[in-house]
Image 1: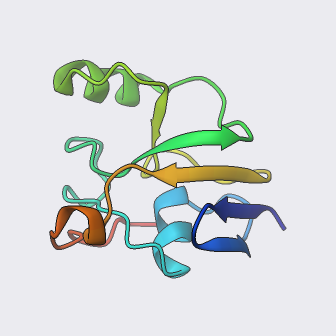
Image 2: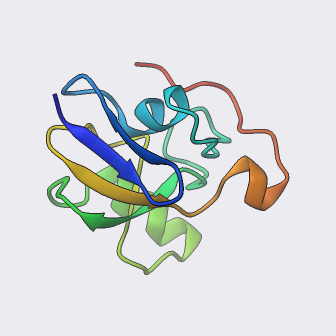
Length: 106
């Protein structure tokens, strides 16, 4: 099973094909997902330090362009874990003092 590492939170194994946002949330990382995983708010973005999710999806490109995001980030609601990765969530409940938002669908 692939391993997800989050600096400051540790590492955990997840079922291959799990949406990254759900893997994070289910393992105690309070990442924001204000739009419920629909790639509209970009609050679930992560910086990928190690590993690969492939090219940006068209929906990620659209969302980042609409929000003016130019960093090398990914939307955790749009990528699935297929191998070992190390990611840093950009927006969390603790950092932003906000409710996480509705749980994204599988």
